[in-house]
Amino acid sequence: MAAEQDASLRELEQAVREIQDRVRARHPQGERGTFGVPLAPLLPLLHARDAAEAKVAAIGTVNPRPGGLKNKLIQKWKHFIARVLDWHVREQVEFNRAQMNCVQATLEALNDHNRALESIATAISECQAAIDTVANRFGYLPEALEHTNHRIAAAEVRIEPLKDRATELADITKHWHEWRKEWERKLGINETQFLRSVADLQSGFSHRTSQMEGTFREIAQAQHRDFEGALNRANDGIQKRLWADLDRIRTEYETIIHSELRSVRQKAFAAATLPPVPAPAAESQHPYDFLRFAERYRGPELYVRQNFENYLDYFTGKTRVIDLGCGRGEMLELLKEKGIPALGIDGDQESVAICQSKGLNARVADLFQWLENEPDEAHEVLFCSQVIEHLPPLELPKFVKNCAKKLQKGGVLILETPNPECLAIFATHFYLDPTHHRPVPPILAAFHMEEAGLGRIEVKRLAPAIDSMPSLASLPDDFREAFFGCLDYAIIGQKL
Image 1 (spheres, rainbow, N blue to C red):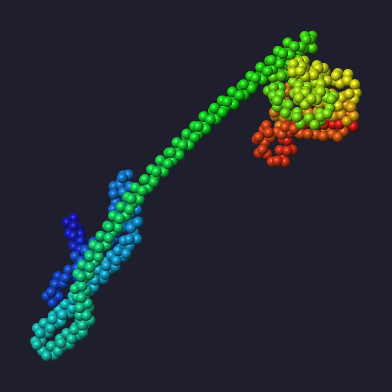
Image 2 (image 1 turned 120 degrees about the vertical axis):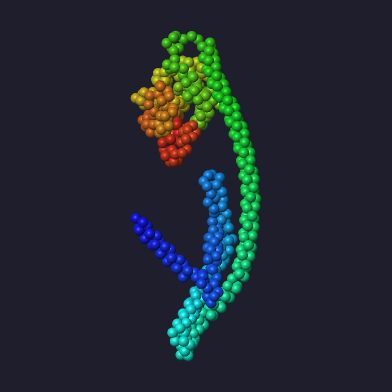
């Protein structure tokens, strides 16, 4: 076991000696000296070169710091400063690297110089040893001296190129200190400029940060003021809309109350002024409050009268005018204001009573019986609004023929009814009234008039659906006109 340890130690010592020999061969230190003068040691210069290279490599880098949010922010700031100043220190880094290359070249030259001196010393030592050997063996023979002189001359010839190299290395060594001092001076200047630039950048960044913070505060304050202003305006708008809605609701309720009171007054006045009638005749033909229904879903009397003004041209100058199905008497009132005498016929006792309470000429009668009892060609204008849709479909031709018989030559029959060409009436108006039977298309009404002997038939479409349903404006014009045109129509025929 001990033998093995001794062998391992010897191998280790041998390896260490080999490493030392290689280091001395590469960087001779002149331990034995040349011509009695030791060579200059280069290891301190080598260490200084390595330290300088480490400093050059560290320029522009950021020292690591332990973890944490604060240190992370500091590291990001250092990286940002390093990237910002990269353009400023780039020339300095290149200069430092050139200086290090110069130092490396000088170090190599000094190593070569030491090797050359060692070679010279070795050659001279060999010559001296040869001379000593010859002198010991043969004495001071002239031939040996001559031979030695030749060898010395040959050595001098070999040494001559090395002298120039040694002179060059001596000059380099002489000027190296001056170069180093100049390099250190420039390095100090560059460091000063670098630190000044960093300070300027830091102050500029602080100023810019302060400006941005001030600008941000001003923007935030302006936005806050705008938000408060918008909030106040929105609040004012909401309050205005609230009061407007309250006024509208109050107006609507007042209108409804006024209409209900008016209906009550009309019924009470009619009941008080008309003579009593038998119970079956006094009973209304409608199973519900017809007046209230008409007020809510057909429209107020003023609205209906305004629509009836479209027919005034057909009544001008006429004296024998009949309103078949006069209802609340809107047309009778309008004709009375224009000075045109007219008679209203309706099968509802309550409606006729209201007309009579207004001072209008109205009678209770079944339309078909009244037409049967009237003489032929006795009237100039027969007006019938929103009635024919209440008749059974097979009774409509008979009704139109009876009307045509009662018109004198040139007399006019006017029929107004919901327009089935407009699909909107089926979703809104037509089926609200449970007494409606079936809508009458304009083509069918015109056919019945032709069959009854009426001519010059004219169809007028009334009450555009888009006025009461604004959402129809989103449809194409041609499609809207074809399927959602007017809610009502009037067909006018003249007896020829």
